[in-house]
Length: 309
Image 1 (cartoon, rainbow, N blue to C red):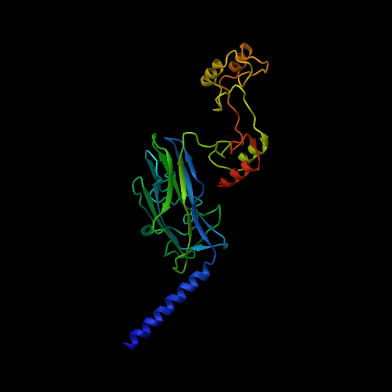
Image 2: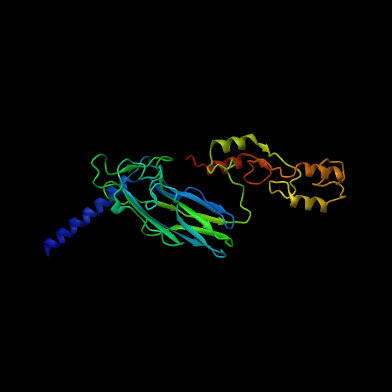
């Protein structure tokens, strides 16, 4: 009995010491989050990276498990398919992205421990570790922001009748491990997917699929008041039939938005101006908060969505 008690005490001390070492080694805060919220129109699709962050400098990882699922908020309608991206070299792993935490490292992946397990429209699971038997590199990777900090890229497809807000949450199987086999504590920031008929302006001002230097240049070029296209009466960015309908409804009015030449009467000359701009589009504008001006608040929105990839 005495021997068993002694062994139990030694085991308890070892466990506590191991826990203390692990806590000391990861004194900073490691975060896992979607890189940015997704805002989609009904029937639309989009993607976002799930990334790592740390305020303690470089962290070393042996591997990770990532379990994600979506939970519609009250009042949400329609359906949303939540899956892994498939534009990669090895669709069965989702780990061939050049900025992925594991695939970015030259050590090969162990196929027995690399699994992608889509779980229908509600969730997905990834388990990824570097090769235990690699003889050419240490058995860990170092995460570098905007270089190899991605755990996965997820794609969302909304049905045509979808609306509302959906939360992206993690399951209990989500874990990070360090080179010594200790679990690394982390904080998950709940992601959101919003389905909206009229989503806010995208910070991707040039429409190239990323928020970067060219978008910043557009925003700074618009600083102050945005370029305007007066005949675009419905504000959809293009002069067309809806604008003509609004204009004809204003025919004969004394001034107003449809009085393009400001002569105090909506008439033939204004109609000629509208038809002369038919099909024209308003240039992209940096007024991301839709307050009528491009200012520091718009710059903050753009920088918050900066992808740098």
